Image (cartoon, rainbow, N blue to C red; front, top):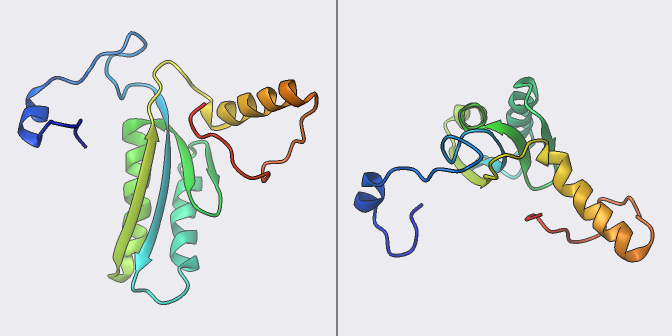
Length: 144
């Protein structure tokens, strides 16, 4: 993706932005939320999705799966490799594959898979006087 007003040719010619926390924008740990599913494979995609989740869990990266996405935490190359292998596994049946990826690049931060949620829970506890501890209480901010 390119910033508004940019085109592919001009974006390729520019160097990657530097960060005071890391050598390049993608050095260090970050969060990748992704959803992968076969298209045209029938009504249930459970088997294909289970295979993708198995690949994620065997990677050894911190991860969490919910009803919509699987989130992994790690460095750019290792996470992209896991996402690639999960996508290839889902497409192994010759089906068209849908892949959605969202990345939180926050140089200098680690442990964000749990840290982001813990900060929200602490804020809620401070503002209400007690934490419910519930993780299914409706909406939560994904940019903490």
